[in-house]
Image (cartoon, rainbow, N blue to C red):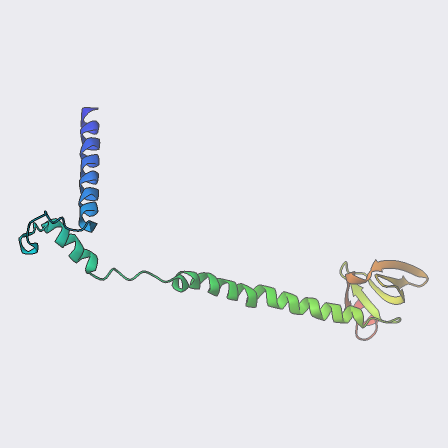
Length: 153
């Protein structure tokens, strides 16, 4: 217990003595009244610390240098994930806009049918003779080129 208190007191004294030396280093020299400027007391610790302060500091990394990995990571995510997804969505919207009666389509659930009627958001598909089904227009996945029977083979 005594050992830890002694170490603690020593550490506090060491910290205060270094902070005191730093405080006095920045203070201007004191000139006694009636004493010529050449006879001044010069504090050697103050001149040593000002010489150290005058030395160029180690170069610090700029803000741009620290942010560069994040910028690169965002650019990679944009080109690998966001941009292809936006392109795919744009193609899907174009395909949905070009749907018309009589097109043979496949829905995202895999149902194959022929468009018999459309409204703004709903498509009526004929999936078998006289069997009609209503599906959301956004769920139409692709338009089949050719006959539906070609897909069965």
